[in-house]
Length: 170
Image (cartoon, rainbow, N blue to C red; front, side):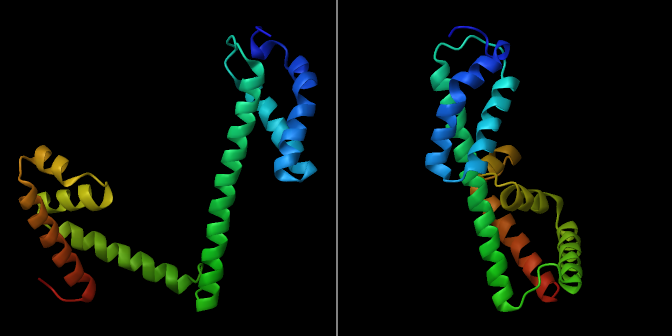
């Protein structure tokens, strides 16, 4: 089949739906989910750029495999989230407790205020390293400093922030 994919979805549906359903049923063991995933394959095919595809079998099943991987990733995130909620419940922590939310907002405001108190270069280095995850070497090169100077700024920032969080002033 060397026709653009967008032209004949009906033909693709007749050709690949049974094989896709079997593919998904073997992996999901749930007819409704297999049907949904099959529909998602055809939705992606309909949205695909109408280009020539040399091996439509491979293309269709690559889409199917990608959908399964996406589903597995989403399920892992959901599982991890549920496990975290269960752990919080066992500890007696209510995630949407208003006092906990207010406390978190106050802590963030205190952190922002403490960051504003830092000298500009120290604050910039701290933000780049701790929040933006930029490597020390790149920060040093960008600011014309040595890596040890970047380390000194980071230690100064951490000491200041820890002191402010604990209620002591520098």
